Length: 384
Ligand code: X2X
Image (cartoon, rainbow, N blue to C red; front, side, top):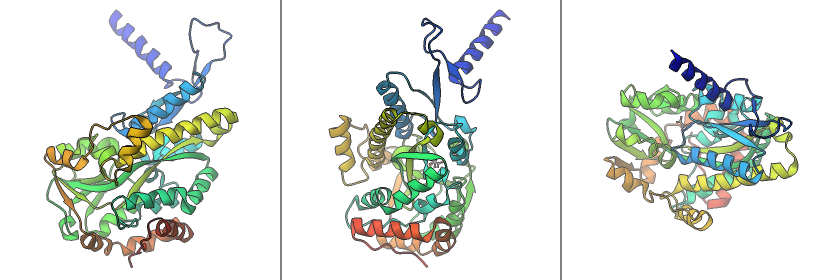
């Protein structure tokens, strides 16, 4: 009994310290040995959909640590990994961030798109062209983020109460399944595919002839294990490898059909509460962590730029330099599509563009097309 009481007490203390008790403004004195007149330190909250096993989660940690270090402990941030802050429903993250339930987030544009329809720009299926050289598709993504389209998107987020500070990357999404290799739309026909609860995914996978089913990431791994679904789609370095999807799915098709940028962002009220020097620390730290994270997302997939950035700017050598070889060593069979094969999938999704370009905004889509064409000199084709 005594043991039980002690355990309960410890539990309550842990919850109090972690900010779960007392709501958003939960406070704790920085050090109990200090005088009680010291101002209590606010613990800020940061939301992340995935865990610290992914470079996405690691970059969130890097960002929080750097802020704490550079502000000499004035700003402390507790990270809520694996969607703990929004009880699993990842498409609610933007709501929590804009309302200040979360102060910070490293969020996926896919998860925020149900609230910010313009972010569906990145999930228009097969929108980004592969380009002429290896790595061009990544240059196209950078051009959109840093170009006219990115500026429009930043403005929209700010108007909704969120300050975007840096672009990270979940990555181009590839499809995996346990049933068969997918080379043609016919191979995909009827497969039950787990997708994020964001409507453009349902439209896209229906157009491709599959049977999409929405599911939170928090429930997905068990569903793969139990074969509740046949397949899923996610980026290689940030999700497929860290979450060991090869343990459930033998087949992967590399089709780069959608990109999922991440945004390192702060709630506007929280941001406005910081002085300019602190804001600069927070922004610089976001840029530093995001650049590392984006490079991690691209290791072995671009033209070698990302490995160079990691080595030269971060003195960091990733454990896995060739993700395809690594996945093959884990038993995966990988299908790479030729441009003609990719075009056959793209030819099926004209209806998705008809529905979604007006929701995203034609001006934004046109801005992105011009950013891409200027950057890599390849025409962006819209399927009809
Ligand atoms: O749920 C997913 O598929 C994930 C982890 O990629 C996102 O959060 C969008």
